[in-house]
Image (cartoon, rainbow, N blue to C red; front, side):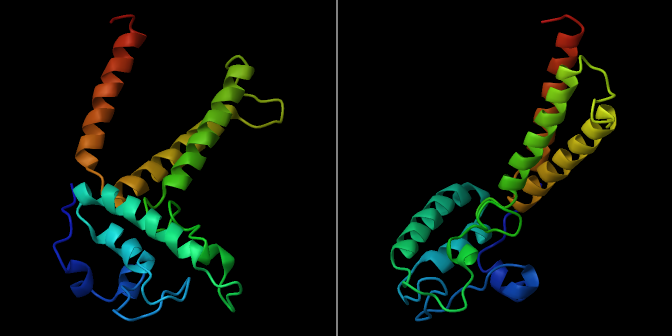
Length: 182
């Protein structure tokens, strides 16, 4: 399990750019989105990733509220600012600051479901009518899903040991069911 960063560790472990995080705005600096000095969104985004795990959910809710407030104050025109960045579309995606990778995890779950549905539709026959091998496709999609799960566990600083313990317990339950036991 990875330990939460101690107070101030983000500032001492290298520059924000080296860490791949957004820089912490200094006091009096205008928000790069709404251009207001009093906007709390930039600092709230950074705080989510630097917070210990127990505080991260609360800070994520605060960051979302700060983003909504920021959006209310966007200038009518924002020269040379990409719209996607202003709207905060990076949240929940790889590279985002709020639960990074969650959207990719959802996408990969959907792809596993899609191939599993094709296996059901073909009555378990791996040769699909489109010529693809569903056994190979499910292996690939399960691998992609496992990669997305590992990314989320690592980047969202979840307890990897707790996740693995839960997976082992669940697998044992499935094995019992498969053998016809309760």
